[in-house]
Image (cartoon, rainbow, N blue to C red):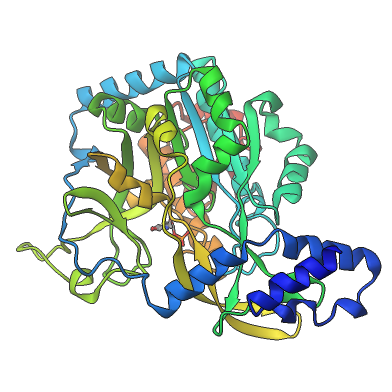
Length: 451
Ligand SMILES: CC(=O)N[C@H]1[C@@H](OP(=O)(O)O)O[C@H](CO)[C@@H](O)[C@@H]1O
């Protein structure tokens, strides 16, 4: 009965190839494949393919783009920085700050099978990205005497492995009741002719549907209720793959709170016109990010009189959202963005279209947003590629260089650490504070590693 119904649907949408190998499968495998097929919205997939055919992805052409007003954190006075920090710390102390990490992606460029957050970038301590983040959050939580709730978005593909990783590592000392795992959706990938791609004869290739689904997924999972119950006002959003992420940065939170816009973001200066980062701007007067895949050449190289790129505010995927805004937009339908990718399947490689929602397609719903420039070397160490730029080795070097700098700034004589790799546990210092020569002597290993 189920088979017949499914077959008819597939025939209607010309996707009957999904059943080509059904008779070769064991009964339980057949059952799994049929329910996978049953969960697909074929009408939606047909519409998405039509979108590709009509090349509707690029909606940047007719709009008017302008740079977004911003402030450089470095240029604020020390009084202002202290004031913002205190404001942010107070919000954390009052339990008004939560953190959301989007960690459901596939890490295909990195060539790593497991959840990206479990990746060890090769630091002396061998800490995973998750551990680095957990410890930074714990440091702040200890200072505030209040645990910062942590919402972790996984995908069906990596959910179990993520939770297991936390369990095996005793949640890195984080109170379990303050971690909330929830899952994003997946969508099939389509081949260039619009056919749904099979990963193997028994499985459809399902791809996480992008970070733009995070608030609807949070709501569906009960996470938004949890946020409300706890009285959280600001949600600090970030991408799992930034090894230098200053999670729940109090200064940033304080400044954004003071400005009062529903969204705030950090940015760094774009390294060069071709760097694969989105850029902030105003689209027809509303805040937006134009993704690197969609930035027209005319905007990419455009300079202002000083020679600086006009659109130079590189998105490092660090945002702050006000809870009221999240509630307002959680159910909004965002447009699916199309990307052409090469996927590895059981009988080789195949070119596909994959469909994703982008978090920053929510930005134009805010009347204005706060935009803050920060220092790249202190805040942005993306782990995207296996080797070369933005890889584990560049991220590791950025962390070790920063920790070295922290010690020097704390008055530690160069001879003591010259030529050594310095790694400071985030449990010991959140952003370089509280370090000294005595500390080096005390923690020559463990919390502070010198190699
Ligand atoms: C949809 C989305 O969030 N894209 C972000 C995100 O891209 P990735 O495709 O995940 O690398 O992170 C980049 C920073 O690491 C940022 O520049 C870009 O705009």
